[in-house]
Image (cartoon, rainbow, N blue to C red; front, side):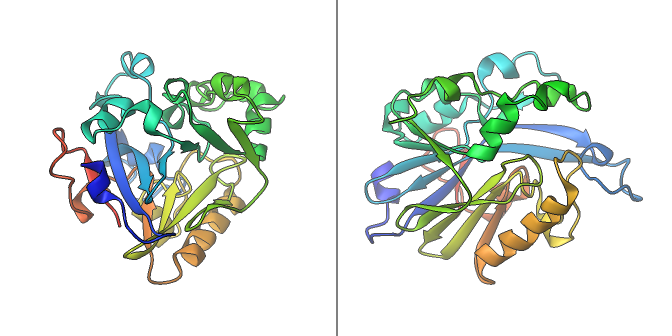
Length: 270
């Protein structure tokens, strides 16, 4: 199945979103600015993304591990990202690169299960979570204490961990771009597809509403940088490109499902 999704042209990719969980939260916990809708509930979807070229298989983010998901009240866990990859016919050994947009617990959960992948992380992000400031955070402590650096730090820096400083073209047609805002070293991914550029915003914009309405998410590292991230996302999309937010359930409605996958948790972005 997966080979049928790979584009033939060099420098062109197919991008899929794989939803592994969902939950419901109050908008007051999701948006920095309070308004008349703050007491309403909103669905939060959890994704990893898969980028396929003719000869590369890149996973963007690594979700929540089953062990972390099990005690979380209110989380509807569809399955480990590893299970969802299996529905597409992929094994952990097939992932040659894992780009981590940031190091929160819901984006790093299965990194230890990718035995051969090259990890790509912004240096600023890793240094923040392994430095003195992260340990002193008290607000949203449940979230920040879940940042996972153990397996990333233990990776062989010569062959399995690439620390990036800013923007970088990783492969023809696929690049990473530092934006900050949500975390100190937040990065987004730009991918060239047959439909044009796709910008995987991840948590630089949790929902379409964030970047479309200039409305920041509630949990952030630096508010000015989050506004700047919205501008950078729009710039990378080049006007006609597709922006994919990190936690919006509308992603599953706006793009066609990979119908051959048994669980139908995957949609094709471009």
